[in-house]
Image 1 (cartoon, rainbow, N blue to C red):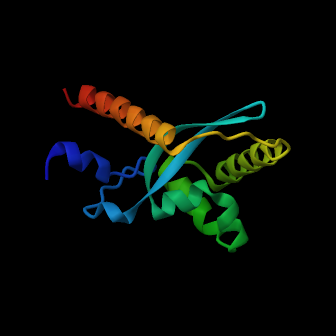
Image 2 (cartoon, rainbow, N blue to C red):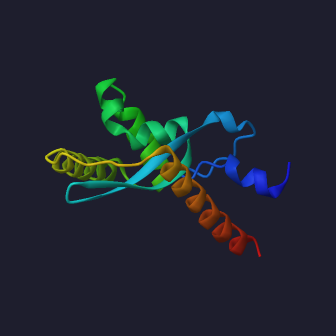
Length: 130
């Protein structure tokens, strides 16, 4: 496997390498400004990191302790700090839910954003390699 392909086999959360790329999930990153929501990136995450990012789902399923443990391990923080960070994330989540966002992304625009992002990431990764 070439280095070009291999770099997409890493979780950007924990850095773990996955031989089978299907073991990774795509996570979208958005910016929220006023009532507009904008896609700014798509990142590969392992199932545990993705579950941790979506802490609300974990909490709904009664798995908060599991994601807190993973968060502590990946970020090298105490459980007390992890709980504080989770509380802050919940505050932001609830604040954002007070708005009704407009999202206008056609399929072509979405793919252009994804391709632009991947090219930017590829350039950054290649700079790190050189």
